[in-house]
Image 1 (cartoon, rainbow, N blue to C red):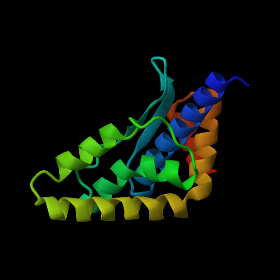
Image 2: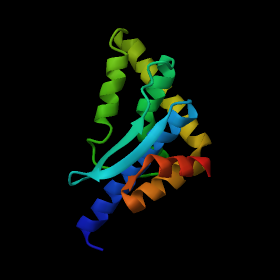
Image 3: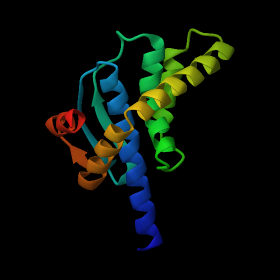
Image 4: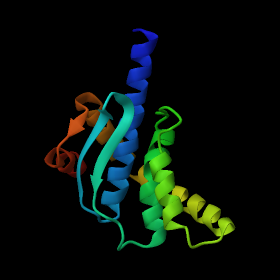
Length: 150
């Protein structure tokens, strides 16, 4: 396998675990989830997952959903390029904009810890979903639902 192909697969694997982390954590917190896609627009590390808006959840759980992708990548040793997760981090900053900086940092750490706990407790589900997403590059909502039910 060429170095370029290896990098593409590594980025896609990281994106698959990232999106699976978001989906499983949101689902575990009672939110509706839909389809997911990776390797979007020529960026192997780019992905998206359909997750119900989390506005009704408490702040810690909203932060956990944001942090879930990066926590899943770390837990499964599935890195991508350094730009991955910036959108999630931006959402966390937005959620915490009314807090003092010290409290923002503390709450971000708590959000990451909550995400890690949820990803860890649903490890098999995250792996099953990420594997399917890596293999197919796109999963419809019904496929995600079936993988979450198994």
